[in-house]
Length: 183
View 1 (cartoon, rainbow, N blue to C red):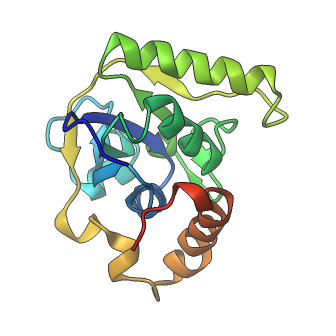
View 2: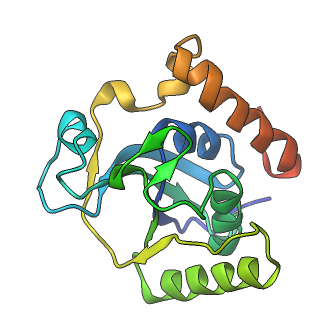
C-alpha cells in the first residue's frame, strides 16, 4: 500500500520508552521512532534527571508515520493496547510521573482524535477502569541519549528487556499481526 509522501509525528508516553520504541518500530506505516522526554520544565534533560521525577518530563517516543498507511486513530489504538492507561504515574513496577500515560497533541486534529479514541474505549469498557491518560498540548521533545535509541534491538538479553519488553512486544505482534511491517 503506497503512502502520500506526507508524514505526521506523534509524541506518546506510556511507561518506559524502551517498550514503546520496540513496538512502534514494528508497526506498518511508522517511518521512524525516537525515544526521549516531553512535558517537563527543564530544557534538555538527561535520563538521570528525568528518573528523579523532579523535572516533570515523561519518558516518551516521537513516532513519525504516514497517515495514509496508518491513521492517527489507529496509532492511538495500538498505543492504548500496549500499556495500561488506567494507572496514574506508573506502568507495572515503574513508578513516578516520568512513567505517566500521556499524549502530547501536536495539532487540534490530534487532540480531537485522542478524545475520540478515549471516548470509544471508555464506551466499550475496554479496560475495566477509567482511562487516566493525560491529553496534553504540544510540548518540546528532547531526544534521549543515544544508547536509549532502539534499545531493545541492541540489548535483547538485558534483564528488563527479557522480562518486560519482550513479552509486551510478543503480545503486540500477536494482537496486531495484520499491522506488522513486512520484513
